[in-house]
Every structure is written in C-alpha cells, then in structure tokens.
Length: 115
Image 1 (cartoon, rainbow, N blue to C red):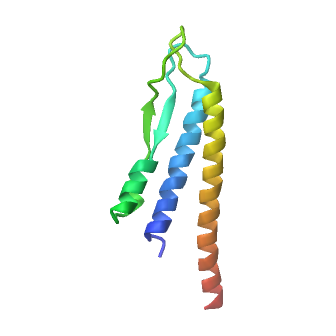
Image 2: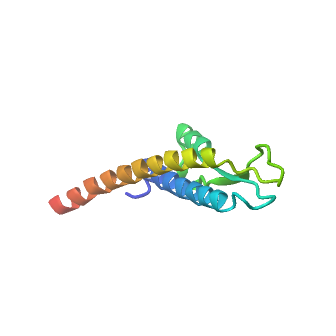
Image 3: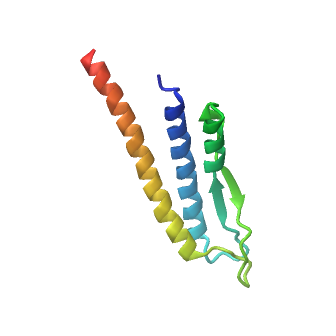
C-alpha cells in the first residue's frame, strides 16, 4: 500500500530535495571560506530513469557532487545569486512534493474512515 511507485517516487523526491536544501545551506554558510567548493545534489535524472524503466524508485538516492564552477581568488566558488535561486526553486518543489504526499495519504485516510 505504501510501496507503490508513486509513493516511492515522492519519498525519493522529498529526500533528494531535503538533501539539496542542506547542501545549499552549507554552501551559503561557507561563502567566505577559502578553498570551499560548492556542493550540488542530483537525483532527478536517476528518479526519472527508474520510473521510465518501470523499476521501483526506492533504490534511487541523491548524489552530492562538488561544483566545477570557476573559483574566486581565494579558491571558493559559491555564487550567492545561484544559491538563492536554487533555494527558492528547491523550496517550491519540496512544498509541491509534500502536498502531493499529503493528498495521497488524505485519500487513504478517507478510505479507512469510510470502511
């Protein structure tokens, strides 16, 4: 019941987006740290691929990669504008995924109440 593909995909999406939010927070916190390289979280392509192949998305996990963007003189490559936009985008996607999960479980609650 809770292991269907859509529930698994939503759980993976929420976990990936939460990991991305953590990476963004770390990037912003280290914006002035010499030598710090920004982290990027990727999971969407692997999730989409698993769903397209008809596989369970439960095995998909987010990948944390080091950004290859050019660095400033101190070796840091965090771009505050990029991080801010990524934060806004990730927050909106996270809220959408949570709403989708809530809707899915609301239907289940209603079915249980009606039984």
